[in-house]
Length: 375
Ligand SMILES: Cc1ncc(COP(=O)(O)O)c(C=O)c1O
Image 1 (tube, rainbow, N blue to C red):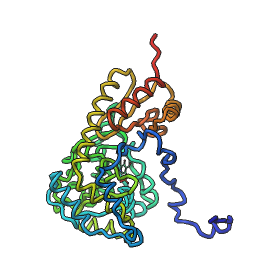
Image 2 (image 1 turned 90 degrees about the vertical axis):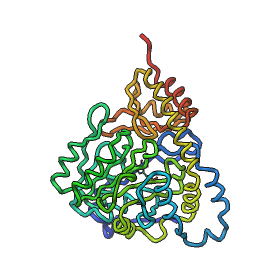
Image 3 (image 1 turned 135 degrees about the vertical axis):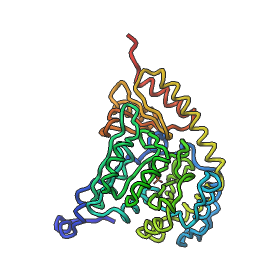
Image 4 (image 1 turned 180 degrees about the horizontal axis):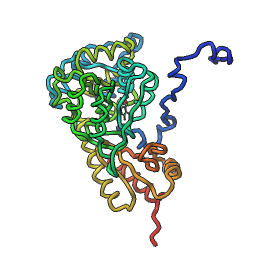
């Protein structure tokens, strides 16, 4: 079907001014299937075979029925309490979303009003900005500090003291700098500013173990909400499923602004199977951490600037122009993400860490493309 829009039709149906002004979140997602994908920090080997099996067993007629969610919140709560040492999270404290992206969107929709302040760090995950912009919020983004991109604790505290912040968004570890901040510090932020909703994006927490969940008492800090996803470690990025964990009230408010069936049946079945097979996820995380050690050794001797901290990714500044190196890597079948235009890290490439084999493949191609002339 084609839509013909006349200029007149557009002018009669103006969107909200905030939407008119903002830029949508763009990511180079097409044509990636047959390449080595080190550009989106996804799991690079696929989900547990039990997930694939569970999806294969879905009867034909289930596709024509709206999804059922029973048991999923319970399974997430059990997983968080038993495997991760969270302190008695109840199933009613778990919200289910169409990926953490949808949870982020819902949080802004539910809590961010025109003129409210979003406080966050920079550079950080790119989707927070359009979500704030679509609500008409003011964005205050505090830069990471120094060559090592340390978390700007004093600066965040300074802004919080003014008591104007509606949402504080902390990505821990941060994508793309890998910066880690102690869970206790985050809880302290929340305690000191009860009127600020403190959102902790823990997408890459499995690679550091720095979660607030084992420490937080939601009765004492009801203004804290934690985001978790099955995209990065469990390998379900294509199915879209993520969780928000907080007080019953906060989870309820965030869930109110989503549609009743926003998470599809395939995602639910896959999530249940993935949560059952935690051993697979643990083994994958272990494999990535080994690969991280391996690539760290290569980088140490590489005479290039690089930065590697929390998360399953690293930053490297090639000797040659980053756009050219990115393009040549693509020709060699390897995708990485260019950080062009991002504050503090312009000129860097972000490289996801997969298995050691994949890192070896990357390193061989990268060293050939970005060779250093020996004088
Ligand atoms: C920090 C961070 N938060 C959220 C997301 C989105 O996760 P999901 O796939 O669960 O929507 C990403 C994906 O790259 C991310 O890096």
